[in-house]
Image (cartoon, rainbow over all chains, first blue to last red; front, top):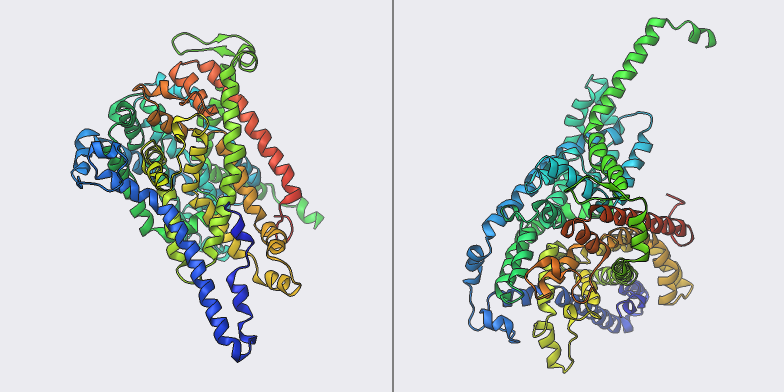
Length: 304
Length: 322
């Protein structure tokens, strides 16, 4: 169903012939252009409706009364804005938010601090085995988390880390493969002359990394930090396994899932209000950092 | 030259060796976070999980060596293993191609308007930013009985399926959810579509190529590296599919104990990752879960290898092999 439109000729090709059209037909061509332009925007607007309508219905439901959310009425009557306040008392929303931010901020710091030097060694230092090391590093992206999670659970429970944030945060300080990959790709694009000049001035590798590379790679580092923060904000599997039903360390992902399950899909108005509050910060963050974000996605061709 | 090399004083050679040793120590220092992490969080757990896969282990007592019996049980006497594998293959075989086609279609729509492309792109991308759990909870409600979709379809007298309550529709519901968050894949395809040199289309126009021929012979080969990339990522992550299925079953299933909702309805959302989690962290069959994880790893490697091998025949790299 979605494939068909691809085969239609695109408008720029129709427009390309315009200058050669005789004057008598110019008006007709302009009208045709206008029509194709309207058609294009109509298609684009159709998808705007497709992508936005879930948000609209979630918002409408979030301000309904509990009874109404269970009925098939679409428009709230009355508007019950107090649902958003209710979320904070009924769902422990503050605690979950605090936990989510705590995990996301510390893990992001860990990933950035540990991944930059590794990416530097892979991109800008000359040593034998560099290519092979890079391939080993990349190949670990293929490794399913399920392979390592069981032994890690055994080890972490032995040192009493299960039920704490340590299994989520400590490993972040040992480099993240996706971030290393993204940073390395960016570091490679920095002109060799700048590095050579710094070397000639007697700078050591650490100074080159700090004063030359990091300074020039700020957008890439921002993108890595952003991706990592969003990953943690989103993360479900990690907090689910490591919280091990310790409700005090539930993040928003785990907390909202538990909340929904324990109420068996009966208070959809509060669930939708909570979901909205959960997605709002990252959507706002995205709208403000859109450029860095989309460049990052395009640069690597992937988000982790 | 030859004599010069022989007469290099031993002291200078020693100096060079010391320098290179210092250089390697420096490299190792920069690499150390990842190298340490690699051994602690990848190599050790891999070896340990391989060992556990030949044992019965519940963390209460020592692992008990049972040879191949976990693997034998999995393949011969555990119908749920096969159910979970079937469900996973379904979501990959249907979900990944549908998502790629939809991503290309939406990216193509974005190439149409000359003005306002940035605006449309932002709108199309926003759902991809919604946290998986929030998006899944929203879809369970939106597609649910008496929910907005049901009501809207009711206006035109179409009866909506029960989606996450119906074993035949729960997986299509999950595919629909993945299409809403197609933004990232779409962005990559958009970049690829805009990268196709326009002179190729112009040349095709002169030769009188039809729209289908242009798509088939120009667009498709030019974006094939991105299709390949999206397919590989889709397969690798598809086999680990977890969060959406866990949350949808938890929200749609009636019982309060979320672990007993897994797979709801009727094991139709019991994916490989879900079943492995259930074995490992609900029943604490750690040996069996490890064996399942290794089979998963082998399947992922085999599928990736097949994709990479096949890519020689259908992926076109501009300017030779990259």
